[in-house]
Length: 255
Image (cartoon, rainbow, N blue to C red):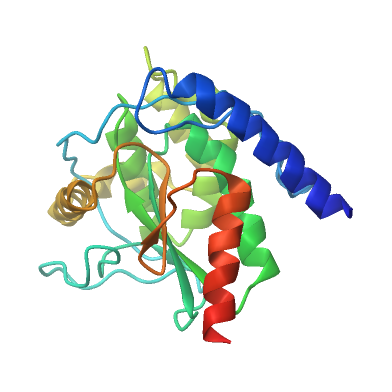
């Protein structure tokens, strides 16, 4: 068994054990701390147990990222499908045959744990897979974290800010008492111009985008984060190996 297979096996086993315990508290299993597949992106995340999607909407600003992420549309009603909207951040090649859609919360520990796993899947299949991110702010403070991310898109630093917020999540995302000022500090270290970001965060475009994301999450019966769809097929068995298997099956289907 090679090294990658061993890591997947360990991660899958840890997730399975925690999912049993988490089931007591929520209809959506959460993720235990897992060994990152790419050791260069090490994270140490506690498990997250989340509530069903609520209807909170935030204000903020959509934006653009570098060449790895889709630029936002001009101000207008959002179009697209319930899975992918025009305003959605898209990482990876626009013409990739396989699309992973992730409904996520920046404050969610399980989302943090899956972040390096999704990164490795995309690194293994750089021409075949793209990631579409949909905001699902479930925890206190998550709405402002989304504003930080959207202003980072405006400044072409979305990916480094997203990575930094996940890596430093324990420093700011205490669900009982979130320290959002620390999240701004983390974003600043990743390249965000905080003064410009705070001036842009109240744009109505992000409010409309968040309203649409929450509505789409409800339509798709999203009960917790992260929730994944691969080419519009739901990940029905929760775990890193299961996600990778679903992605591989879709890649093979289009070859």
